[in-house]
Length: 114
Image 1 (spheres, rainbow, N blue to C red):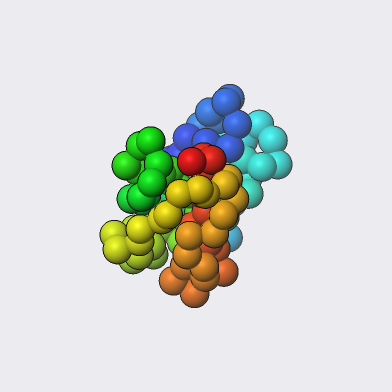
Image 2 (cartoon, one colour; image 1 turned 60 degrees about the horizontal axis):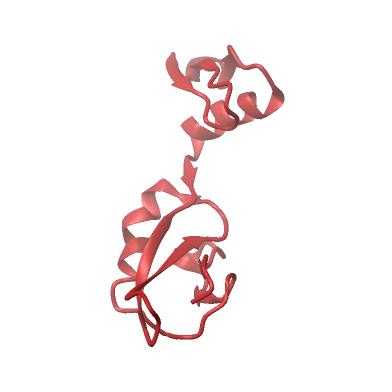
């Protein structure tokens, strides 16, 4: 049995997941909590946020994020992709910085017009 706190909504339900019985989840207050509990133990994913260097803008760095969640085991590789990227101003929200991160079909995208 594994105990988790659900992060899907502000309620923060205390979940218990029984791995030995088909990942049965208890303690959830909504269907999304049940799905989160199963997914978190079977294939945990995260949406990442970071920054990249930008030339010609007021600020030296531009905020970026993944456009969808990627597996936790790929986080280090995904972050490593950003270290050599340099953007040129202007950039718009949603501009793709890097595609198909670690073969996940997720992209790094710009989150601020600069």
